[in-house]
Structures are given as structure tokens and as C-alpha cells.
Length: 401
Image 1 (spheres, one colour):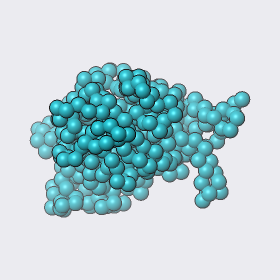
Image 2 (cartoon, rainbow, N blue to C red; image 1 turned 30 degrees about the horizontal axis):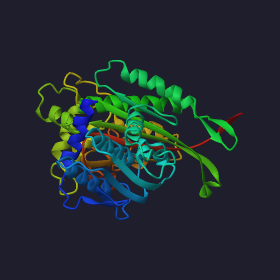
Image 3 (cartoon, rainbow, N blue to C red; image 1 turned 90 degrees about the horizontal axis):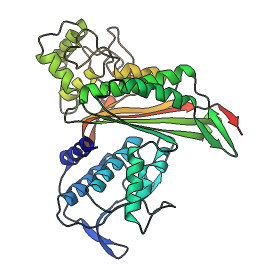
């Protein structure tokens, strides 16, 4: 996990602003203390936590660490997965860490209840109060391995058959989703076409992340079941919640940008069209719609690749892959972030134009700038690329005694 440790430190270094007040009292003990001020767990709060953690890591004084978040709303799955990564960095730096929180969750953030963070949380019923070594080891084991109720995998960019095996594993996982429903265990019966498309999509997105970031990926998947919606005549819904994280010193758009602007081997008409689009869009750039956003969107397109020798035909675009899943969903909340840029992967923005590009504007990619609602800025600078994918599906359950 040495590469992960280095890249997590890069996350902290890219966002670090020293905090002055870091020492306080918790249960009458002197500790490094971070106390939340009613912020939800999202980009703004994570930025403050990163500043706090960066400060204590650089401090020579070693004290126990308490991150007191209190009762709080979890904004999305990626937010608590990033908190796990920050906690991991503190733990492997030798800190005795507690994260005190009582999270409110929804269909897309239900996985926080089985997060490795529970082993560091005094609110957890099985919290090892008097044995910090045991709770630390419980956290590390849960962080690195798949646990009951979810799927987690670290996939090496050097594993030639890793993506194929991942896809096969996920097909089996989606076909065998038993969960407790009152006194019975029930099988969630997902459509077979959707199962294969979802597994293939996740595999392709991991492959894309490997290509752009040239580093290893964390894949974390959890399932939510038995959520009812009064607005939908009390129908039962479940969630398939996916995070893909690729920490890297290279942002998602950099390889495609360099290939199209500076390579002499571009011959494919699709790459030439992206270059044509850039020449038009550079006259449209402003403080909000920047050149980075353009290249980020260009890198998401179908058959556009950053691989040096993969000129004529790129891989499946992230937009096409996610759009293929959305036809099966009741609702979804999907976005991808790299650096400080976020692209919102909403259904209404993912329609292809007559050239086969996605313009994120309902018009076209070549000559029209994307809708301002399709992109935004993050409070946290993310080195690499991260996907937050939440798919809400109507559930049909087969009982099993």
C-alpha cells in the first residue's frame, strides 16, 4: 500500500493550509481536536479536515487525535470514502485516532453504516474503547478488504486481467444480492441486461481511470434495500452505490489534451473534430467555463483515448457507459471529479449529438459551450479522478426462508 500512502499524502499536500488551533480537551484529555460546526460531510467540511490533518502530520508533537463531527448529514458516498482515506493516512502515520459522528444517511449514503470508520467511532456498539491497537487493526483490515454487505477491491494498473476478473466478480455479486427483509432473506432480482451492463460499465470506468491516471484504483460498492417512497405509491426501491477512486499526479484531462494539441500522429476524424471544437471553445472560456472543463468533457467522450498508440479508436466513453445504465434506473446521482472540477453526469446532459459527441448542453459539442449546471468547482482539489455513481432501482424481491 506504499503507493496509496504516497498518493494520499498528495491529496493532503494539494489542499493544505495550516490551522492555528489544533489542540483541545476531549473527555478531560489533551488531544489534537477538530470540532465540526454543523457542516454536512461534503467538500467544505473535508477541506477543513484536510487542513487539520496536514497540520498535525507536520507537527512533531504526537497526541491522540479526535475528529468530532457530531450529528451530520452525509452529502454523498464519495465524501465518506474520502474521509476513510484521510483517516487511513493518519493511522499509518501512527496517530491514535477517533472519529466521533452520528451520520444521517439516505438511500445513496446507507453504506456509511458499514464503513471502516465505525471501528474508530465511540458511538459504535462494538467500539474498542480501551484497546487502541485492536480498533486500529480492525479499521485497517476493513479498509483494505471486502467486508460483509459491500464490495471493495484495490486493482493494480499492472494487472493484465484485473478488469476482466473484476467484471466477472461484479456480475456474480449483482446476481446474488440477498438481504434481510423482516424475518426472511430475499433475493433482489435485477434485470439480467442491467446486471451485465452495470458490471461492464464499472470495469470500463476503472480501465479508463487506469489509462488517464496510470495508477491503482479503489472500487467500493454497497447496496441499499427496502427504501419506500410515498410519492411513488410506497413502491420499494434500492440503491447500487459505487465509488471509483484513482489517486494520481495526473488529472483526468491531461493526456487527451496533450495528445490532441501536441501530437503529430493524430489522423482520426474524431480527434480532429475535438481539435476543431477547442479552436471554437477557446473564444468562449471565462472564469467559470475554463479550458480544463473543456478538456475534461473531451476526455469523457466515446472513442477518445489518451493512449499514445491508441489513435484511431478510443475506448468506450464514460458518458456512453453511464447513460447505458440510466435507462434502467428510477433515479440517479452521478458525477466525476478531477482536480477541482466536477462534471455532473445527469441524464438530460448525456444525449449524443449528430456527430456522436456529448455536449452537456442539449445541443452539440463542437460549437456550443456546456450548460453551466453540468459542471462545478469542488472545495477539495482531487489529484487524479473519482467517480460517485448512485443508481436508484425499483426492487422485486424473491423470498428465501
